Length: 206
Image: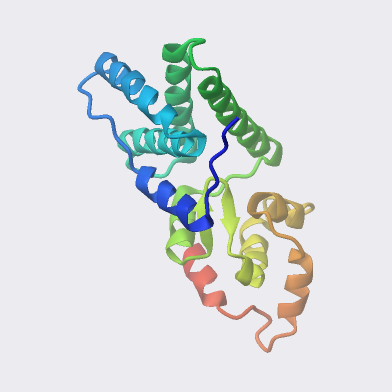
């Protein structure tokens, strides 16, 4: 089986190229026809390019349906697109079907994690965090690894009342970071007992 090799730069180029793809259709029937026609061509371009194209299409669909960043609504639209794609390809494209099922599994795992963690950050707080460049993405939430002390400070301030007994576990699961308790102990030694840049978090929470 032929496997096309990609350099890192090529992969980023393809992701950028297909990151905002649209099928300009006026209704779902026309959209499905255009999708199947385009899919036949994209398959011939190779697996990676086809996957980037699919990722771009689903992202464009979600973007067109949501003008805010409510995560639960966005996830629902991801599922809508994937399920519609599975319906129209039937059993004709097993590799595309496999890609869709893997995508749905990622969404399911994400939902289960959200339920297990039982943690919610309000949208306005999340928006402010992103604007302050503390987070690198929203799906899943990923804290900037160079600002762990600020993460510990945020977790301590935001979750100390709602999750007093498992505070650091909540922070670790939610932001995928470690050593939060140690980070707090470190910044407690500062003159003001707070981490460098604490004003960013205070401004967000107040």
